Image (cartoon, rainbow, N blue to C red; front, side):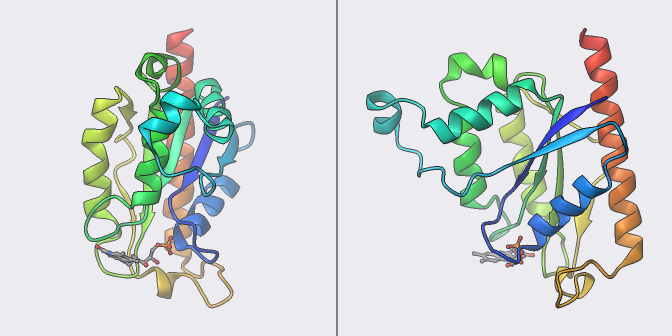
Length: 190
Ligand SMILES: Cc1cc2nc3c(=O)[nH]c(=O)nc-3n(C[C@H](O)[C@H](O)[C@H](O)COP(=O)(O)O)c2cc1C
């Protein structure tokens, strides 16, 4: 069974991406587990902090969770057709120091989901993540296709509940596929 770490790339209280991540967690088939890592209190990356103070405790604890996990599920917003800064800042911290990347990130399966209020559903942002994953030697999962949620303001009702059953079904299939893939990779690796 796979143990995953989930990261939501928006700090907004009623974030659609956080909502999507929580729904994905709820749809994880029995036996698999997911821990939601919080990145909102990560400081802005500053090499002086790293060199003079070290890796902040809050970053180190997320790194440990990722190192132990079989895969990472990231719910990414899209800002100006790219990666949102909050989430890139978190991954940049998690990637430090470079000598620790093998323990934490190399070969780690990573899947992306994302929601926008517009019509592209984070397609640009998800593409923009791929070179980052490549740089960190992570294993971007693509067997489940892409999960984009467009017009999130319509898919989620004013109460924050997803009211589109087709999206719900698609998300359930996506997370089940990713958990199974992580489990299989774990078996291969052991
Ligand atoms: C700075 C900024 C840039 C944005 N750029 C895009 C964009 O390029 N494409 C898009 O579809 N939505 C864009 N949006 C709208 C987001 O899709 C929308 O705010 C969404 O709700 C953000 O995700 P969240 O609900 O998880 O916070 C942008 C929003 C902000 C604040």
